[in-house]
Amino acid sequence: MSVVSKDKPLKHYKWGNLCDGWNLVEENALSVKWERMPPHTSEQKHFHEKAQQFFFILKGEAIFEIEQERVLVKKEEGIHIPTGKHHRIINEGNVDLEFLLSSQPSTIGDRFHVD
Image (cartoon, rainbow, N blue to C red):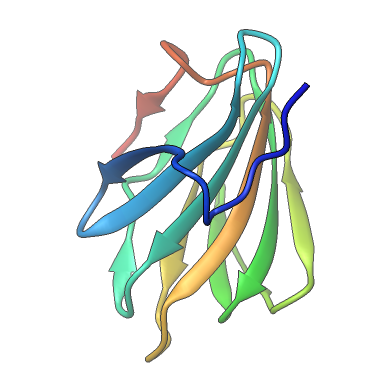
């Protein structure tokens, strides 16, 4: 067992348009990430055949497009994305968006783009 912290060296990765991520837990059965999106960025709409996901907003506000619906999720709020739902996250704000993302099981090899 080990304690993880953003202050300790974590596996860092870049994704999307200038976005950052840090792996807090990366196992086949569970993935937990801390991610940051600069203002006015978004990801490509996609879905997962196996994984469900839960996003919890730490800083800023997120717009989620889930199927045909847009949902605003504010700081200290979270949203569950069931398996198979087409979705993406968008930062339409003027400040960085930071959030925790839990996926069960991990999304490695389980991301399929739409549109």
